[in-house]
Length: 349
Ligand SMILES: Cc1ncc(COP(=O)(O)O)c(C=O)c1O
Image 1 (cartoon, rainbow, N blue to C red):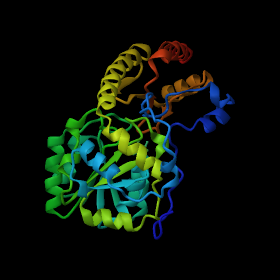
Image 2: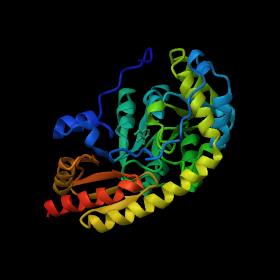
Image 3: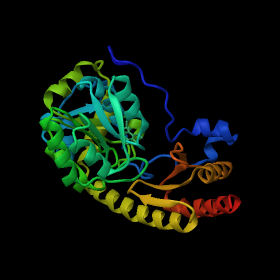
Image 4: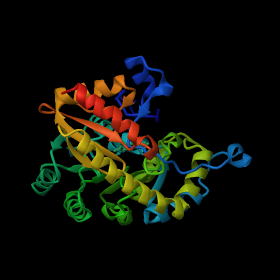
């Protein structure tokens, strides 16, 4: 735990096969895990030179330089952290306590972190409602998850620029979580960093398929990065993570291929899901597809898929609606997943 900061609440997350295995009494190795937005293809980690394991992780600039190039931002705007979770968990405590606009549905760790830090939360349903909150001065800060997980909603960069200007005028912050933005750099505000009143979180876990590496970045003005850094224990980020991150972030050929594969497969997956589950309204991103519908139906389909050892992510009920989020299957398993899905849909009729 970071000194002087409170611990996290234990929230539910995707990818928890041990819990699913206990819940459905099916061994871990028999599951098809579609419960995360982590790419099914990972950047291919090579055997690491022995010295990488021997070296203590001091900032040697290789990772930071590669990340600044990759995110097209100023080197001074960037701090490497052990997953964007680290930054989003501890940053709200560094900001002036106030009222923050937050998506009604979104990665739940944000809400927990802002609440723990004593901020008052005002929910917004969509980008238009957010604009209204900011324009009318109803909030000091705004959090945008872009694209949103799990709704898939995207707020255009142009609109975010305007929100940033308004909030900055009042000494507030626009905080943008871009954990899922790698395939759509056009929506990113990273290249504007550092800018007063703007924070961007990035993750090496989703697009690079390296969630277990625990590597992410916070892009923000220097003074804020220094505060976060000062609270971090020494060597928090392992040297293997720094080394792998530097090479992966520089591998432009792999990144181009990954973008093409994810775009192609995600579009196909969206078409497949729309055809297989007509009772849900689907929205696609490049890393997951989410279907919203009747809460009882979503719950039944989740259970039915679970009994078939297919793990998806079920989100809480809001006004009688739940979301089922489907991560991308590997193309070679897509046929089998669709077969099991059609069986489950049939069972839930
Ligand atoms: C929207 C969003 N942001 C951030 C994170 C944290 O990811 P990581 O700490 O692996 O970078 C997650 C994890 O699922 C997420 O869904």
